[in-house]
Length: 345
Ligand SMILES: *[C@@H]1O[C@H](CO)[C@@H](O)[C@H](O)[C@H]1NC(C)=O
Ligand SMILES: *[C@@H]1O[C@H](CO)[C@@H](O)[C@H](O)[C@H]1NC(C)=O
Image (cartoon, rainbow, N blue to C red):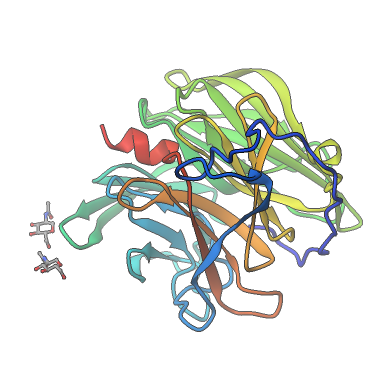
């Protein structure tokens, strides 16, 4: 989620060399042509949407069902809904002030949700039966009043460790407006990083690398968009070896287009939403831009891979600047998502 109306910036048309060569190996069957001109198709539009314009936190369960926050209209922010295979209510938090903003599934019976205003991560007990997923109970998994608004989360499927990205949005960002917290299953809760405002967060498929976005703005205008990577020990909840992975000022001159949700696929490629850019940018694990997906709405907030084979990429966001509904685009890709793949075991 981004807490302001962004300035739509024109992306400069820097030509990048693609590691795809002539065939686009990000799509099924490696078709001819560049991966830099991929186009998503509308899946949920403003006429069919049952989600509000703060749709975010796209997540997948083991079956490939897709969920998001801000189900219902007008915009209750304490509700989660199912996006795919059909729209429907998934969970209503009893705390009306809750601003649920990110979801992750650990198994068919457990999920985690961040609440941006109450400085906490909720644990949901889920009953996934033949045709429906139902929440049967919720508890606070971790909480700390010093957490900045936790914006999104990622989850180690192996260790059950939750990692949150926090942000405070004000007109002039400084080095304390973002943070990373780690919540371990044994109850330990630690702040492991303080930085500019953070948003997108995910792990590599081997869960040894953590990717985190960092954005700055001045006078309300975004002017820095970076992605950092760290070594992470998911059992101990420690991070080290901070390294610059991508800087959009250098990638394509788009430092004024905010980074929002990010997800890795099973090969470790990183898919990044650009809020205001109507686009998803795909990086190889080495940090090269290997694909770009054009969307049908301007402000994507998050994305996840689902469907029966984990290869349907769903991208969510506000339908338009003056719209009160949340929209979803879809594109079939070659590799399943990291989370879908790990949840199959
Ligand atoms: C899960 O839901 C199914 C279908 O509604 C029901 O038959 C089953 O008893 C439920 N299981 C649990 C553990 O609640
Ligand atoms: C699940 O959905 C299918 C197709 O609509 C239906 O035939 C089946 O009876 C449903 N199962 C349950 C347990 O409701």
